[in-house]
Image (cartoon, rainbow, N blue to C red; front, side):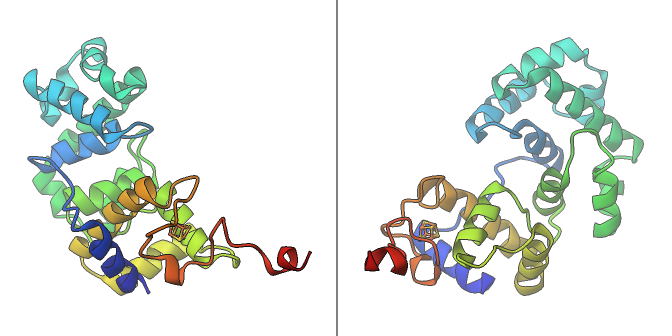
Length: 220
Ligand code: SF4
């Protein structure tokens, strides 16, 4: 089923080919900066870090917290995110750098990422998938909403079941990353908070259409 969803979404939106970044650390930084904001705001903050020449774990860790917060201001929650970025930079430095982290098996690396302050399952999986090219699926609000609507009126899958199902069926980091990117795109264009179902490629398999009148209401 997830393969069919992937194919339908590629057909609808074209390949997304995330993540726009020059190296894995930039992806890690982006994964924190994009928390609770739009990507364009995170991108502005990344550009400021690049222009200041501090988009490296050691440099980021050495920077004064206030200076870092000022640079990433466009991403919002800048004091909180500055703290999180420095925790992450320190984590990378302490682990012996990105190459040492890359050598870790996926489960161990995920557990290690989850020890970083401000890195929850969604951010950890985004880092695993896009920075380290591990075959993991990112369960975020868009994925939860879409899977719940597809399953409607049955309850949607739990986060764990959704993640396991996607990973079992799609297997490769490339397909899992693409599915996540496409679900985000679909959630911004069609499957929004107020669903815009006209033209949605998933409509034939979807149980949730706001305009669909329940049978009991049709009779009244
Ligand atoms: S048909 Fe509507 S509710 Fe279902 S997936 Fe498409 S946009 Fe979302």
